Image (cartoon, rainbow, N blue to C red; front, side, top):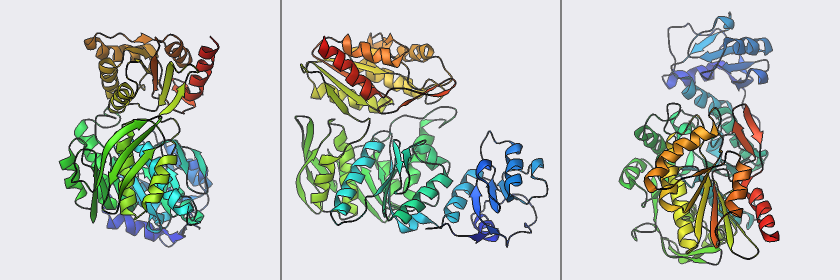
Length: 506
């Protein structure tokens, strides 16, 4: 399906209707000209492009390059000398304008899709994969095409499949993927909504059939992200403004505030492990071998469900997926099959030594809330074992994670190794020293090993058996973001297998 070819006047009217036009600039004289492409990348401009000047690092030269390639008008928060005589449409907020223009230029593809949007401090990716697995079990059973997914791990829209760059793509990329899903006949899309995407209008124009609110903790609080927790929480709650149905967790902190915000939706489906009044209620949660089983009751059915991957905390994510299935009237058989066979790369990957004395868990947990849930689950599922945790924190952003992860590790782990996890502009040793401040009150000292491969080797080979070793933060990622940019690295799961092979050989 092709993007619609619309006159510039249509885009101008859209900005006018939303009160985004700024200044007293005269109407552009080219309103009747057809816009062939809307773009913010000067390298992708073609003749007939409406160019968007976006980003704190934007330079006038980018606009000059775009005009040279064929841009005939541009949208910006200020005029540029490099724009010359090319018409400038001044706007008050380029981020919001970009979201609206992206949706309009792709023909509002979300209107032809059933989209589930997921937000929360932890569990978004796992929940997204659970939902996709359930939807696919249902659709493929009818001979229909698998659904699309836009997640932290992968972008798969039915036509394009590639590793994800952002949790939620930028507006023009996002709308392209949604249009691809329409073209491919995927019909259902499951996607993660980051707080940044909600705050800065990246998802404006995306109609949601279901908005899922998992939980709220502290994350992404820094000068370059959210200035404080209140801003972070308020940004998360924006998801309900664009959804028909809300699926909310009654067990999360500030559940009353979440429920009030969700009241703008036509329907609210609640889920819980503690409140029997919830629409979707889980009980008798237990570990059976390497699986998790629980009893579930919904308005339509009651029975036993099994998660094929470990982690008692994943029941919360599974309940969210069951709630979405309830909203879509998906039969229990598909829910049961989908949860049983769901697999999430880099989440709760489990590896065991030949003698069974060392269990290694690889998980993407990269904030305090996620790590606390992971370590508590490991304590419960592997009683009597030494608990080792290896982790680091990103450099240059998410500074609050150092306190959260340090506190979780200090309170729950027996042995702690600190290493690199996308240090970016900072030195690994400086980040680790910052984390150590939050270990000290617990009488714990983290062993600092800057090289992650070496740290993983020591974490496994030097543990005191029987042991469970948690490798947190990177999951299945194959790039390490260092000072000079991303550099290839071996995923934690593969490293764990290699080191366990050495352990087995003695």
